[in-house]
Amino acid sequence: MSANSTFAEPWAATLAQLEWPSTPKLLLIALINLPVVSIILNVLWQLLPRSKSQPPLVWHWIPFLGSAPAYGRDPVAFFRQCREKYGNCFTFILIGRRVTVTLGTQGNDYVLGGKHTQLAAEDVYGPLTTPIFGKDVVYDCPNEKLMEQKKFVKVSLTAEKFRAYVGMIDEEIKGYLGTDDSFRVYQMNDINEWGRFPVLKTFSEMTILTASRTLQGREIRNNLTKAYAQTYSDLDHGFTPLHWMIPGLPLPSYRKRDAAHAKMSAFYQSILRSRRENPNGDHEDDVMASLMIQRYRDGSPIPDHEIAHILIALLMAGQHTSSSSLSWVLLHIASRPDIQEALYKEQVDHFSAPDGSLRDLSHDDIRELKVLDAVVRETLRMHPPIHSIMRMAHVDIPVPATLAAPSEDVTYVVPKGDIVLASPLISQLDPTVWEQSETWEPLRWYDEAGFAAQASKQYYEGEKVDFGFGLVSKGTVSPYLPFGAGRHRCIGEQFAYLQISTIIVAMIRRLELRVDGEFPKSDFASMMVQPLPCNLLYRRRKFD
Image 1 (cartoon, rainbow, N blue to C red):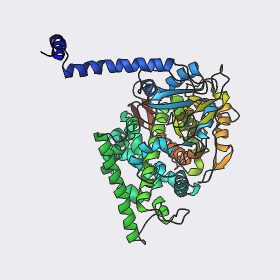
Image 2: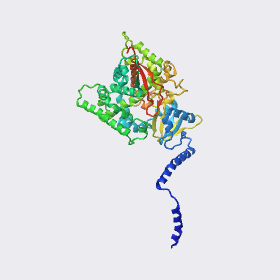
Image 3: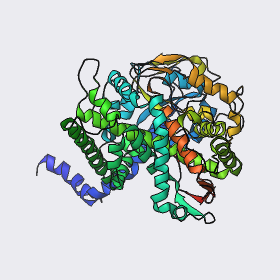
Image 4: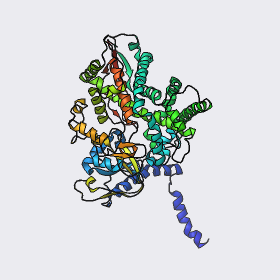
């Protein structure tokens, strides 16, 4: 027997007697302990001293996930709690990403007024919008090209076009009330019976129909029948935080979204081919006709696939924001009989005909309806469709010392690669800025010298800037920013105001409304802040 064998055998015998876990047990132990260890390491990391140049980090227990549950559940409450603890500038972890928040009017100006070479929107929103809108448009192209595309679209957003749009919108709403199954009671011409309709579905369909008829023309509207309802739905269901945060998952909603985009793109391109083959056909002077003759600065025409994708973006982007705003405004009107009566009386005073009917609304009438204007503005104050506006930092960017916590005398620096976030909603609900900030009260807008009117004037009539698609008010320091501000301010805001206002008039002159049950809370699970699913009760007006 060798010396080596003599030395090894006792150890071999001892090891053989030990009861070692099987491989599955080892994996189970590792899976149990790994999260615990990662949480401990995450806590220890947060306890380490941090550079004073970095904004304070919001405390979180679970690495990678970070503050996502609190932010996703109720961003307004989350921002307010963080503001109270850290001040107007802080950083939180969102699914592995660092997000630096800057609140208040200065915080809004920091993000929305930043240079696009330093703070880019396309890096943040491209993964969400490109599969829906398509390649080579909006956030899937250089910013300079996007500005040109905005300029192309503005031909459909002129005062001359708006004058024609009002009648089209009213006609669409009248047709919808006369044919949709939810308005059977209205169709029976019964002025005593109350009916019920689903809020989100109804106003989503109304905005699609009115936007397609006005912005895209009769030919496209007539082809976008209810057969396309599922296509809209599939595209719409691809517009969620999940699709934004984790692109390309092998899930049904992703596949349906992609198939719906392909169908819509093919639909528009088929109409384009038909028009090119028959240039003397009976076509309206619509946005498609305009895009077919427009050229980029380098002289190149817009390719057909880009025209199709611009039209998809024009239809879908506005649909989300307008349907959300419409849902909120009609819910508030239904919950305030005094405001509803004032809206109806305003129509009677302005539009009464000798036979007791109401004459048609015109574009020039809209601004004359003060109650209507106050109702829309107040709803946009309390319920802007987007609660968070984000950009990606391309360089290290200093944050003004005035945005640091009150007790800090430092200048923070947002590092390259961080997402920066502004929340105009926080400014619009700030109790130190707005009296009774949580109360929907259109009366605040009646006083032309009051704070609300001055904030609106600052937003709409402030310093003018041309980012490449015409002069717009910069508006980034106003506490009222319903359509964003700066370079990426919504170019469709005037159309959205017209569309929302006209639909309100069309509904109120025909229906009395009541909330069915309790007033709904906000649903923060989608990209747009919509009310949770709910119904409205309606009754046909006597003189409709």
